[in-house]
Amino acid sequence: MDCLFCKIINREIPADIVYEDDQVLAFNDIDPKAPTHLLVIPKKHIATLNDLTEEDQTVVGRLPLTAAKVAKDKGFADDGYRVVMNCNEDGGQTVYHIHMHVMGGRRFTWPAG
Ligand code: AMP
Ligand code: ZN
Image 1 (cartoon, rainbow, N blue to C red):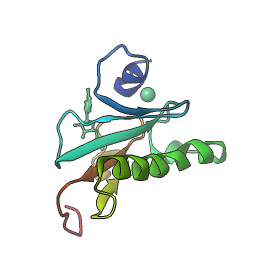
Image 2 (cartoon, helix red, strand yellow):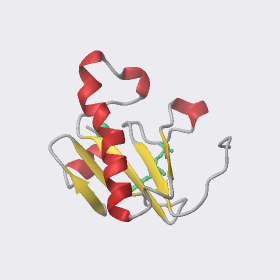
Image 3 (tube, rainbow, N blue to C red):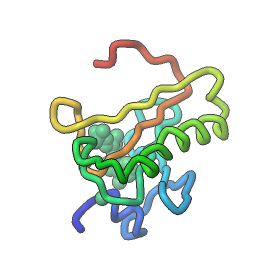
Image 4 (cartoon, rainbow, N blue to C red):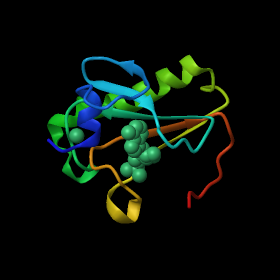
């Protein structure tokens, strides 16, 4: 499948992986927007949030669980952090394999741009 993140999962493209289990992978974003900026993805290919089905509940639930785990490991959980999932063009999605951005190490403003 011609999907960038599936290729990272399959080790066809290198990435700076920070966490992996049987269902999810977390790696540093190649173009960080914060001192720590990583992406948490399901190992199952799901193109957008609109493509989720009931059977994806468990794996998708692991995305925020992993975000919080990594935030604790990296030491910014108590200070706070920002998680974002972009959907389709208006949401700013550029890679069509769902992913949770996890950004920490600075203060974020709201609303997002
Ligand atoms: P989005 O715009 O929400 O679809 O986010 C896609 C993210 O993937 C962007 O923040 C990119 O910087 C990031 N990205 C693109 N290619 C790579 C790559 N090879 N390794 C790590 N992150 C990447
Ligand atoms: Zn994929």
